[in-house]
Image (cartoon, rainbow, N blue to C red):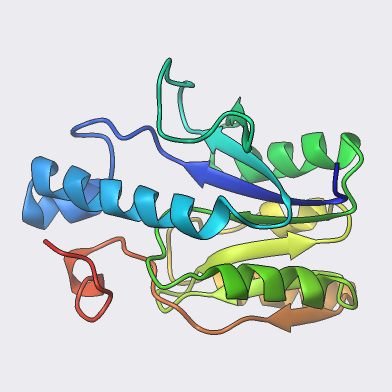
Length: 198
């Protein structure tokens, strides 16, 4: 196996449970259709990467899906909140012997294969890499070893996450590299100019 791993967090695409903030203004069916487009795009930009790939479902591993089994090792997320789930995934994967790991979600339609590869290149020299999102969060987090403080005391799903994370990194004296600023698709206002059809 390669020593570099990309973790992909996705929510099970279930009507009424996926993209609830989009559903609040567009309705559940349209929100789910948009999420399916995001999932397809995430699969397209990751399936040919020269990395190990681990797909972490939010609730269960479906009996049948469109993610190629030999390409993606499938898991289920574990933890009380997003921080706990990410921390557990990083811990498990570092224990498997990987030495550079990045995690992405499935909300960023602008993310490309090139940006992901660049994240791993930066991670060769930097201890942490972050992909800042327009909403104040991040679309990618990478590290060379597990830093639990990155997952603790964060205001998840708010505009404070990136700011809090960078402050903690600075306080701990770690080196960090930033990727291009991109847009996560969480609300209707995030959709224009992304290429999403709705």
